[in-house]
Length: 76
Image 1 (spheres, one colour):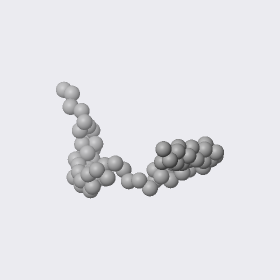
Image 2 (tube, rainbow, N blue to C red):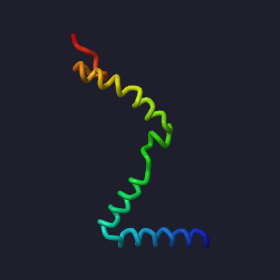
Image 3 (cartoon, rainbow, N blue to C red):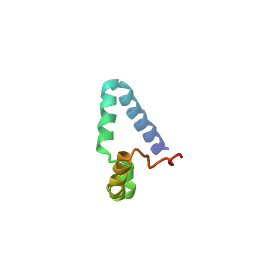
Image 4 (cartoon, rainbow, N blue to C red):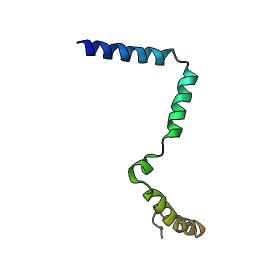
């Protein structure tokens, strides 16, 4: 039972500390945490999204110059 009491005490302290923190500081901490993370695509797939983007960029630019969209079929 001692461990559960310690856990409750720890969680309560963290919660009170969070609630007492000014809203602007909480937002800044959250923003800093987001900036430190890399996008989920890179965490899951490494450099593969970058390689695919580099490979498809000329195709997208060419289609844009021709006035087409790669995402939609050309309507006739």
